[in-house]
Length: 393
Image (tube, rainbow, N blue to C red):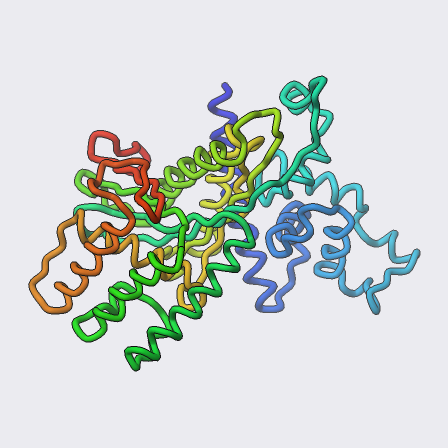
């Protein structure tokens, strides 16, 4: 019976997301949305305005502004108009159903802790004679891109960066490196992209890797490689989603090891995931489904150590870290799918890919963890016997 209940919950969640999509489209067209169920409206506010997920008051205010604007004048509501608006308590109850029962658009871990601190599971885990408060020791940022959907291997790879301070420092270094190399080679490369590597700019890209090594760009490289043979031709988004679960779970294990070596430390690490929007090929509804499924999948076993706070999709042109993820994932695919080198452009790509994989330190496709003098890496190879059932459908 428990399995049947979960299936019903999954169906209801997908229907809710579809309703949000329909509601969003009507709002964009300035069409009447008064006939939508209040739960759909409450869920829409949680999706559209993330700051409302942690405060019932903020949520109610935004709800009134969005769906009852005729009663909000100069950001004020009269006592008389209160009788015409849904009760804040009802909105709060609806919000709890969306977040807790349907597990959509969850609140931050801080808010969850405050709301659920009386639950027996929380007390059994944390309460002791040496009880310490929660501390948020680290933010981790994971940037990913994919490559090789039609080759021997399908690769999802990228970077794992620890702390806001390190991310800002590395971002500034990347700006300096780009300006330096553009000036030296008299080029105007605004986006580092593996597909753009050719015989004319090869030296630029090879020196870019030297800059990564010499400028102490010491982030962790993360990747999962899936053998395409034997898979159905369902769609690449399913492969992306399933590999994303593998990658994030490996990262969760690493974060637990690095930042929470003991349960007595009560440290929670926050993981923020960003993927290349061009490679995703999914719409709003599919993105929310992927985000919800992954947060649920890793949340139960790791939520007291590491929490997937957000999964987003960004344009690689605007994010240097995604551009590096593109070069890394594509290099892995080039080497291990053994792509042809029958042109000068293909030879330039192979030379770059070889140098990048050597720089990271991966000697074989089956290595899972390791490091060289400059970089750490986490790599998982999923070959035909291990392909998840979800990807065979």
